[in-house]
Image (tube, protein in one colour):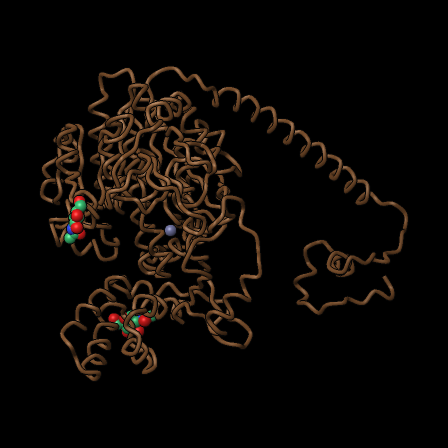
Length: 594
Ligand SMILES: *[C@@H]1O[C@H](CO)[C@@H](O)[C@H](O)[C@H]1NC(C)=O
Ligand SMILES: *[C@@H]1O[C@H](CO)[C@@H](O)[C@H](O)[C@H]1NC(C)=O
Ligand SMILES: [Zn+2]
């Protein structure tokens, strides 16, 4: 050992683990140890023996794993399942893996729980999904949900249409044809991309008026959804209802829904009258908000106005299972935690943790249902993409970064940035003076965000730039908690897959393309989606409809012009010097609200 001086200083206790300092340096530096080679001892032969044993054991594990997987794949991915079954598909829109880290730490902080305490979701992780679309490595919710509903990649903005603008049949439509009952439960507008992709076909996701008509049955297949709970009422009422409509025309889609048999409800009281599901009359359309249902952080204080995600999920599960009790087929239900995505877009970590906790609760509701219900069933839960480029870290200063992330500032907030921005905008209508605005903001930030150390700059920026108030409030919490965000849009991160039953969901164990999630859904139900695609194309040929501006267009609406799609391409977007172009347009600074 002479001449081998340790390269790194370390505490002496480091060397007590059986491995000596020279060996450790060799591992760290890649240099040989210069150990003198004496006579081979019993220790040497024992180590060889252990090594050989380890190799054999590893090989045996690999062989067993492969055999087991092949066996499992053969058994579970059979396209012809027999027997009655229910499928619950949960979508956590915009929830990436870091949303779980954020929410778990927040939950532990709030409950005073130990670091071993997990979310319910954590205990059911089975894999990951890769999310790119046909047009970009960063997908949107439309292409993301089309991968689930049609099991095909399409362009950003596509609502269950292919890149060449043909409709593709969805698992929900095929399930309905096969005799299953079907349902959609969301916290956003029911006409938003994720739910729309299961029961509508349009070339541009922005055509929510058209989506509303299709979802109540005004399209080639007629009515295919048996139950819908969510928001988005403004797309169903005619533009003559001035304050409550966001339609461009005077069509009354509620009347159309009723004509097609729907029982329509639009209030918390009417929801309560469903008695947790036993009072549901099918088909059922429940629209509980004009646009989105408020964020959970705000909604929980308005429980008498809006139902929660888990209440809607519970009611749908009970109603669908009772309605199919004597049927040979079960049901297909999609449940979306829609606004995790919105909290990501807003870069609002306080709103986000409450959205994820609400989703975890709905997830638990589904697990409890599955435990009690006797019909064979599986629940799959995944996200369409990550939103915000969320990081549980943020470097605030130029000096060497601190290794900290604080859940405390999130726990102090009682309102979302969205809600505070709305309050502020409303307040501005009263024409206050600047000093009144300062006073209002100081109070609001203490009451709503639980922030007691707002800087004069933060307040005066809110006075100067009320248009970006939402981002400013969210940033105040993000900075204090040292939460990082890389975008107000989506990211290309892989997202998690969860299941109630990893054996039944075996084809989704591991890392998969999002279209494989779509494959699993149709295969689990054993339904013929291709036949639906064929029927849609046959019945839809030459089927034109009138636009709001009196123009004849295809029943799937206008085809987006290049540039109208989110990324402006049919092919995968490539780098074309955008950095410099934007630089010239916007100058040096980031125009993303601090
Ligand atoms: C309402 O829709 C009709 C077409 O259906 C249109 O002519 C009218 O201008 C719209 N009214 C408003 C206020 O947008
Ligand atoms: C949270 O609010 C309390 C007052 O209720 C305040 O004393 C404390 O500083 C706040 N914590 C953070 C992290 O802002
Ligand atoms: Zn989004």
